[in-house]
Image (cartoon, rainbow, N blue to C red):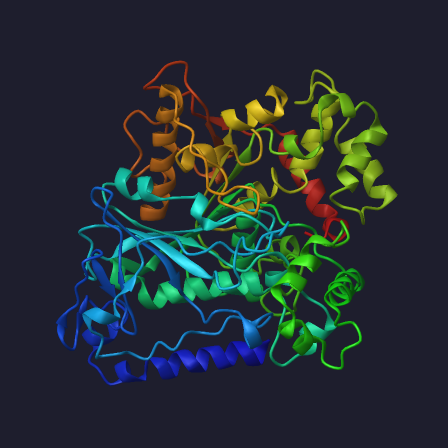
Length: 570
């Protein structure tokens, strides 16, 4: 992995050699070229053109004041001999002879990545692209802040198409650039095993490394769209938020990562597998594909038909999820251990979770009545928990009383499940960050989740996405042809406007207060012991959002979960 990382860096240096002998001003603008080429200004009847030096793209200008550029490749397509390989940088040697005929149509989304469960014909291996929203009047001299969103979905489903950020650009009055990343998922993005690790041309964690490659592409080229590479904020929810945490702790902490701040929403990574379990899951794939007796397993897997790969995706043991693994390089250790040891990039953070973040994972209230039910619910996520740890968990989460925030056995289980990661990792990371950190709790439910699951789920996992992304919380997948956007009620619209302003304000100024809408409550830093509660108001034009102080027992419960990090493997 170290060799591949060094080779990638050397390639980047060679690519930029033509700029090495320019004066200082030319060096600064090397990745911020305008739409001019050797034959003059590049134009297209399709839409406004952005020239990144080695290629030029025509965008979609149908939205007032905003131009969208979709499906932009940021690495070589990970197909053929690049299947299961770390991301390979594109040939970005400047092409001074680009003409109007070379302009690429970037008015639409690229294809989604192959999902889990997988369906032949839905999704593609050649899916690793960026989507960019920019103010129509932004130029290479604008130097706007950039917000980069990494979608969630357990590292194995969902797509960037479900999270349009045009409202972020519009409601900030053109004050930022927004980017969505598509990256390899599931088996194709995260297959690991000794044959993968030992191969000179393959490696684990490729979905995560795709995200990193996208951030590095943004560093080189976002200037051409009007963005400032020095003002990049990365954000994500669920496994997207978990990915953000992994980037913040990458290599055990980088002094100058390719971003200046991070937003972490309900961070959710599955426990890191042991080496033995990784081999078990890898062996199932090679058997399904017919490569288990091959002399060169990686070569055999690369030659396999996409139908065989899809069969392996759909016929896996329930315990095999194909997510990030500890690789000793980009992911050097258990994430919470790295943060506890200070081995992470010290950047400003906005982090939080939903009030009932565990509700959709533990079943209906009627299914949880005993202590054994609670233990079994949590063990489904953390099968390596010892009996001593589960006994201690029941002490940390005692039966309901007037002093506990839970009032039923189901709520007790929900809190335990939620705070093991989704509802505590945000607080923990903010508490140890050493930089400006802002925490929140999202109390407003997603009406679609209420309608499909029942009122008991409350402000469930993904609830905030409904408000941040125009009334949806999921992108196209094997089961959903396109995202569904539900119109806001007047009260929902008010909270959505407030929240988008807060999030985009943090991306623009590292403070959610700077560009908040009029009448918004003021955020205090997490170090003062409080968090913002985002909640619906009783009528249009007002919300019930407010600052609250943390109860004393919440940090204690979070600290207990961190004390059993070896059991959790998070």
